[in-house]
Image 1 (tube, one colour):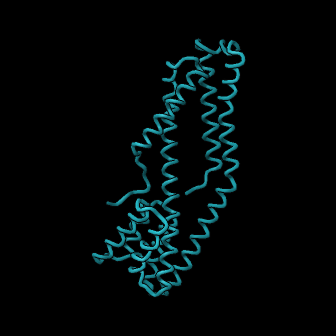
Image 2 (image 1 turned 180 degrees about the horizontal axis):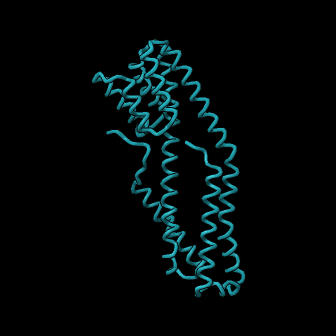
Image 3 (image 1 turned 30 degrees about the horizontal axis):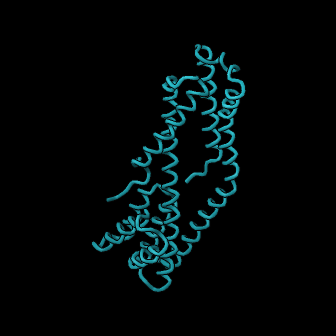
Amino acid sequence: MEIDYRKYRFTWRDWLEYLIKMTVKGCIIGYLFYDSLKMCIICIPFFVMDYKSMKGEKLKAQKRELTMQFKSMMEALVTSLTAGYSLERAFTDAKRDMSLVYQDDAIIFHELDEIINGLNVNLPVEKLLKDFGERSGVEDIENFANVVTAAKKSGGNLIRIIEKTVKSISDKINAEEEMETMISAKKYEEKVMMIMPYGILLYLRISNGGFLDVLYHNMFGVLLMTVFLAGVYVANVWAAKIMEIPV
């Protein structure tokens, strides 16, 4: 069965994670911002935003995982091609080599099986790779498929062309990993900053609960707290976009 990696479907574990997070978050917001768990109904739009954000993060993680496994597959292909095997045979060898590194449920094994099964019924390798590239939604995989297609048509030195492509794509992936490492500290700071408004409210409620009474159980206080909560969410989304690395 072909998988479209441009979309992400929640598993039951994802739904469980989401429900637990939203329940805890709803209780915290209801207590700190409104002093009433019933007011969690106001948070529904924010929970919808959290769902979309979580789904987006899961999709990025899926693409990142696929990209890293694809990088390993390309390196295994180059090893087999250098040893004198054809590109078609190289995929079988790549699967065997990668089984020593990845678990059986790794995404790349499903795609390798699709390619190998397609080759067994005489489908062109370039067609199989192009299909994989389109479904992956990953630029590097699409580029690799295009290079293989061009090399097959031109009759050039396939091994040399693929080696250069693998090196280019590997360098790009390594650069993205370095960027991710460089901004990891900033991402941690961003998470701390996003927690601070909740921490301040919790401190005020514990140290001097009466100080916030004027903001609870009245229309003006509810509106003010809702605006404040919306501001926290906007700041969170803005900070995430600033430090986002496209996949």
